[in-house]
Amino acid sequence: DAKTTQPPSMDCAEGRAANLPCNHSTISGNEYVYWYRQIHSQGPQYIIHGLKNNETNEMASLIITEDRKSSTLILPHATLRDTAVYYCIVLPTNTGNQFYFGTGTSLTVIP
Amino acid sequence: DVKVTQSSRYLVKRTGEKVFLECVQDMDHENMFWYRQDPGLGLRLIYFSYDVKMKEKGDIPEGYSVSREKKERFSLILESASTNQTSMYLCASSSVGQGARTQYFGPGTRLLVL
Image (cartoon, rainbow over all chains, first blue to last red; front, side, top):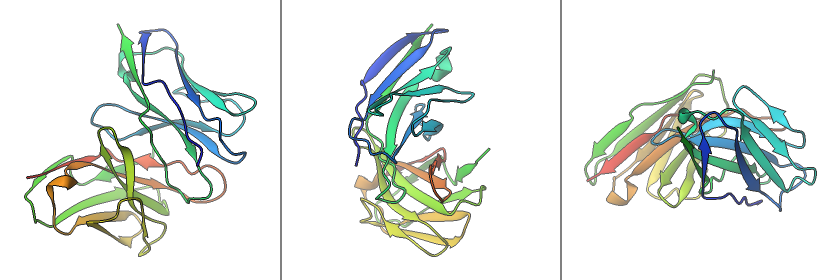
């Protein structure tokens, strides 16, 4: 299974873009990159996912490098409500639908 | 919007009690999952179900059982609760098919076993 590596914590000023990196150097060609976040004491919230192309939705943008070995989640204008733990996950294709959440990046948005 | 609901946000039970955690999803998803989340251990899969009356063990099924009698409902059962089952329990659901299989999570049930 492809593993992911994320920095344990990051700070971001309110109103600025938050760029959260993820390394997944062992990713296979047909594995998706997913991002979730978890606000304290709540269930994980789906943010975005992608395979090869960059993706954007109302919450965030996902930039995947051409070699697919890393990606960056971008929150364009961070707010205090974006303070959460962000998880980068690679969905393996040979073990059904199991998502393996690591320890993620704890993002703190500072006023 | 996909909605996954769990029967309780907080639950306190005594050692040896039988505990039922209920999960309901409204998106007609085939797959449903039960995880537990503990500090420093991330999310660990307990059981999942890919169809009514079907179930598969996850990574840590010991001490748990599940029931899926209807497509929208997936129950987690602690046959005889123990203190090491104090945890946050998360239910999720997803559809099937080629490509991405996004899982949508419920709000979680924080269980304390005394």
